[in-house]
Image (cartoon, rainbow, N blue to C red; front, side, top):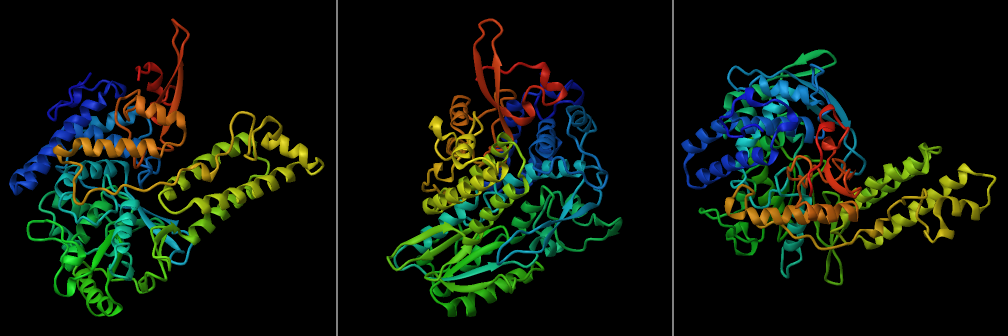
Length: 563
């Protein structure tokens, strides 16, 4: 077992599998809490020293490597050097190199394009900048040091790319504001044009008293596209681990424009604000935001000019194509949801029509392009898609939408099954693919498993995060642990996962590290089965996908601990 103190030497680490991840997390957590307390006490010099101590600690370096090479969704996407650290020996070699910021110079990012999606506000392609694996690890390391300082400083209604916050927090904040009697009924649905690509470097760096040289090098590293190197004079490339944090730092202050906070940091509700700010409320998720106001005139004559001036100081501007003013009676779309005030006096949050239609098209296209795929493989591939979509919309008024989608799934699955056996009668097809005679109902069935229904997902009310509370506040450990556990259990894809999560207290049975509710619950967890050689008893355990026995060369050497 290695020492996980910040001063631990690199030579003590013998193998990646010997790392005590709970001890690593505790060591990093203690330093982050010290940074938080120093920031709250108004000690900038101490904050800076602790941040430098953290990036030099062995525990933080190990955790940064783990986040960049195992947890991050782009862990298998290489940068311009073509290097990925997908096996433990490479991660170990990276750690032994030292990962020092002194003399560190990042390489240019690799430019790739991904589709933005379908819908009235999307279309086209989104440029991504893919850093090298070493640069991603260094960014994750610096992010560990910056987040404890900035999280308590961010505004209460900023929810994008922040730990412990999600899209539903933003939707619930809007629902609370707009559903109150006498609340503002006019809405500015706005978007910042090419936010990540146009952020002014000087304005951003002026807000960062620490790691300025390293962050400037990341921003100025350049972009390689079609073999040519282009310099970067503005923006922070999408695809970098630290880019969302830098964007939030640049945009912090939008809500304060309209009197959202007192001088001591306490929140002021829209109805208690004075002067022109009365009744104005702003909710932001990354570069998308919504502003509510008492009238259209207030939005046009006061809100938009102030926002334009704020953004101009950061090299940004509002997107003319994606910015509009509507009345709440007409409704508006935000983050995939539709919010609308109905004549019966209720404000309903429902899945956006375009997102529902897109989901239907994707289901139909799947069966159209996989006509000969075995039933078991169809169920295996579609089950996480259906459960993931439903988990996202489970907090909206979606019961009728789920039922309609289930009818659509039945239609396309029956058409798919009938096409495979044109000479068989209807009853034979139904029994073969649905198991009606076995009492299986009308769900696609392979003899062992069935395709889940949309309406199996229970629609419930989301519990919004409290104000400006920080996940790095040591006095709120219980609060954040409870929220994380409840979310993991709530969004678990199967009742087996719910039981195992509760039994294991939200930790991996192999490495004992906590499951991250934002990244790991879903495709990054596996249920493993083992048999006790002495008694023959079979037990189940929930582990990270990379901790599954036989997944990697090192994973065959350990036995799962009892949960």
